[in-house]
Length: 357
Ligand SMILES: NC(=O)c1ccc[n+]([C@@H]2O[C@H](COP(=O)([O-])OP(=O)(O)OC[C@H]3O[C@@H](n4cnc5c(N)ncnc54)[C@H](O)[C@@H]3O)[C@@H](O)[C@H]2O)c1
Image (cartoon, rainbow, N blue to C red; front, top):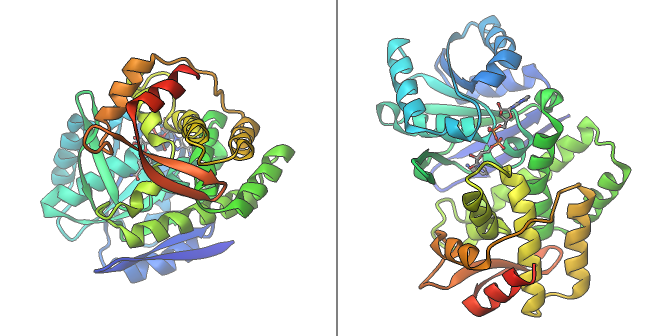
């Protein structure tokens, strides 16, 4: 399959190409970037699995390819690795006309994106995501960042790629837990925007087998919704982009409380979306039926939703979240499948729902 989604921004536009065909990719990349000098940034896991393949692909098209691999996992988003990338790039003769390639999951997309935003005051970069989470969500939208000490995404920039190439063949080597992790963000788009997509996902997950065609479809749907939001609020200035943070306020508290060790981001988001639905029910914004539907889809995707929290600690962590205003926590809440609203919720109600979990 081949599908192109174009992201239209104020100053420029770029394509998200969803295709397993390398010919499709090269016909687009040749139009988008003029340089033959590439700097592929990946992590040590992906380097073992897929880097040779990608290098050969580019070399056959006469590109000059340099590479660097950083440590895999969330720890990879570090200032130490960023500094390593600057050193490697300089050493290998990467200049301001070269193009960086972020080849990996969200960790690589965020780190390599921030590298590209800052190296020699900004060089072009392309996203080639290899996890479901990165394909369906993080490779689109231009948010790049690294973590500093204990704070996540503290140093970063909005910096859009020149092109995103999504090739779902890379998912063949992705562990099941990581697939489920990405599924959470896909499910999120159904909850926020699309009751038909919800039905499609419920059907798919009931049947258990997910084909490559299904992955293409789910990824295209998610990228299209993310694109629409990013086009309206590229730099999160008018509040419209906040809608895609459904479930994230609780998820961030959960990730912090468990030191980013116990849950993958998508797993925390799944639990966070159920919390938001519970809060919505408590505030009578949605019916019991909607809450049940949220829970049903998350169960069908086999998320473990039973997790204990310390209500006071979670309230305080959520208040520290970037999205809290004047000490009140701003939540994205659900009215129905496909309909959400932003609302500030008082501490008492939040505590009440935290205690009833
Ligand atoms: N920029 C954004 O808009 C945005 C949005 C959501 C999440 N994020 C960020 O994304 C990160 C999480 O991304 P992630 O879930 O992709 O994790 P990740 O990048 O750490 O990848 C998960 C694991 O899968 C391995 N892996 C990657 N591709 C593989 C493949 N094809 N086969 C086998 N193994 C493979 C990686 O080496 C890693 O061990 C977080 O840091 C989060 O903050 C960013």
